Image 1: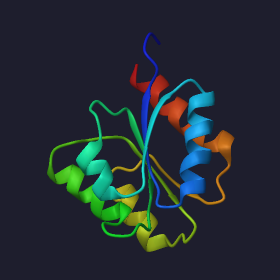
Image 2: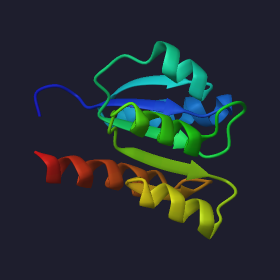
Image 3: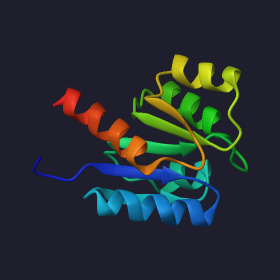
Image 4: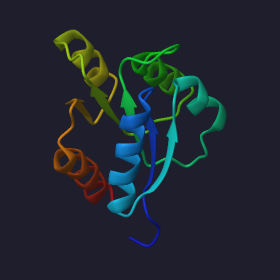
Length: 123
């Protein structure tokens, strides 16, 4: 892999954003983090190889952002993270193409494995 993967993180919890940023950078990824779906939509820089997205956000929810990106024709691989998992939300996210739906607190190795597996298969 010549260029590092570009990961965007959207989570309204600053401590989670920082932890995910550190984790992804330590794995060699380029990272941009956003506190809201609206900030992501306004400031995100293409291309994005993977989006780590919280389900419950102030303003647009993670699922609403996923739908909005889909409507725009932007098919960014998404890994959802949530502290409040339910089968209905999981089903909706996966049906719209999410790579994974992970429960907080996150298992760092599981998250990195999802990202690595996805991009090994797409090369």
